[in-house]
Image 1 (tube, one colour):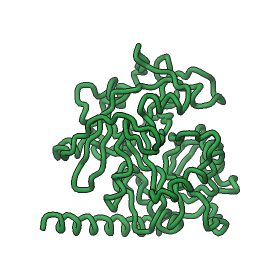
Image 2 (spheres, rainbow, N blue to C red):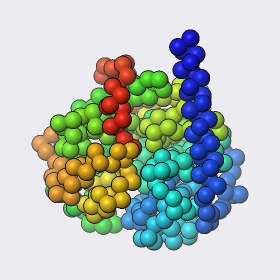
Image 3 (spheres, helix red, strand yellow):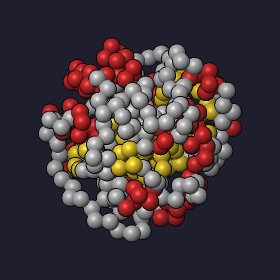
Length: 360
């Protein structure tokens, strides 16, 4: 009876989120709609952005190199030229929203509307503008090869660890000038420790650890950011993201990825949060308060960033490539089993769940 009641509640939760997406979609204003050019087997990318003009050239180039054929992006009223840049892209459709980012589930209602309209039966990449997806052999095997492999194995998606990259010096600086690649500007990362927990009733994983926990949440690690994501899914119109791309409904999709140490094929999202503009953006977020469920709990976090701390320490590792990430257990190949860390299969306390926000 309990299982039946839980399944019933989750079905209604999924329907509620789909209706939210439909309503949000009606409020999107098209700026350049080129979706008529989408082919039956095209790989699509979905994102919601605001003031990301500095990141967009590398973002678009990276995903084009991976084989994305069409980008579907919502611009949340940027004023830095992002929308103008995106409108010029021939393989991109763009919508604008002036609604609150926070009130639309941190943009997921907008993205959900586009996935519902255009994503069905396509392989879809759903990422933020500060996330660059890589996976084993990514330099020579594009997303078409990767998704063909997943299709042959009957697998509906691929998970990834969001890996925070940072500079050698204090925040507000980078190790290379503007125009250099992300991994030249932010070449360092924490190899661990990471831990994974399962949260019922959806069965979604929460992976925590890494540099942000070490520096900003050492005294309260349950509030540290969630680092596991499900960015690549063969989409169905019935699917919906629940908490950013950290979790999905139906809940079986959350079983696609357990976090670091999972030997199944997985990727890494190279996270460029700590580029020099992070200091200015954190100061702005202290005023806007759009990125967390309970923003008052993260005032100290943003203040700490504006103090420009140095994230590098003696245990930092310099990123050399995907093979290094496989050797460290941060990426799985689906071929060589790696020893998995123990997973706590009990749900988080309610207070801890509430404090884990939409945490990019």
